Image (cartoon, rainbow, N blue to C red):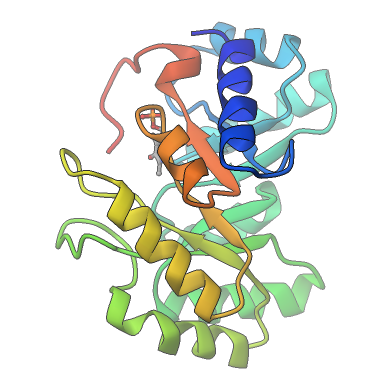
Length: 219
Ligand SMILES: *Cc1c(COP(=O)(O)O)cnc(C)c1O
């Protein structure tokens, strides 16, 4: 599907939900895609991308930013604490803040740099053992902990379990954000972004629907 078609579907979903046009940001997820596909989407004018791996992003994006100008980069994959410094230097947003040790590291980096990427807390709404994210019962406490470290939080992020109806997970995430005064909701991927928009997503992360199937499995 083309970038224009995806953008058209996002705008239609906004309208259907009675939400203002442009209230949903499309993050084009370019992990492990061939460079020519990424360049084609840049050439069409898109400037917001998501990556899962710090090393892959660091190898790819500085040169692309030189050629194409300002690009907003979102880190959407699990972030190891020892890669946090490289991540804050490269990314405009991190969607996978999911544990106290990473929050402490990001707070120290923010203080040293006088700047911090936008931060989303990842919530493991399906309570899946193999998946990253704060458990739902611990979310309010972790948000308070992050705030006491001086971190400014932009919102919450989730990846619903495969093969399940994502709608209850999106609704749960929206409820957690609302009761904690957070406006950002990073939810919805190729298969379910319209459902996510109906339930309040502000950021959708769409990969294969824009770029085609990935050569190897990322998750
Ligand atoms: C890969 C990935 C996406 C994009 O998935 P598609 O199904 O290709 O749209 C979105 N979010 C996260 C966290 C991912 O790892």
